[in-house]
Length: 106
Image (cartoon, rainbow, N blue to C red; front, top):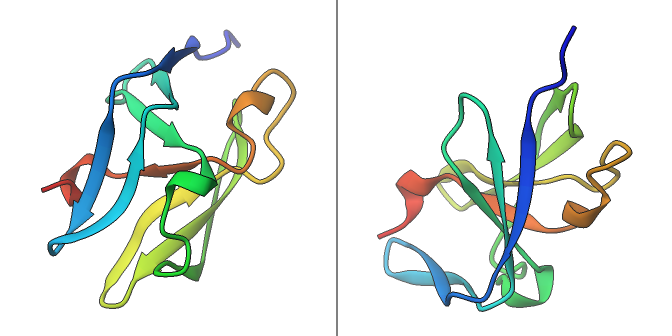
């Protein structure tokens, strides 16, 4: 089986994530992850994310290329963000970073 082509690119473009008018992330130091079949995702350093507003979810998923992901919710908005705490070999650059679904950006 062929591995999914995943590429990581550092981005210094200022990116923000807002949900219901609340600024959840603001960074000029994201990693853009591109994976075949999925839209590009930006992984924010935790220090640039309002982790105090996010609630750890019971949801977890597994990607054979990145590993186990944990999810975060914002009050009534479930599972709007995720993180790989211990990614698989080769994906260490995303360790602890937080990605958001693009549909939560306003």
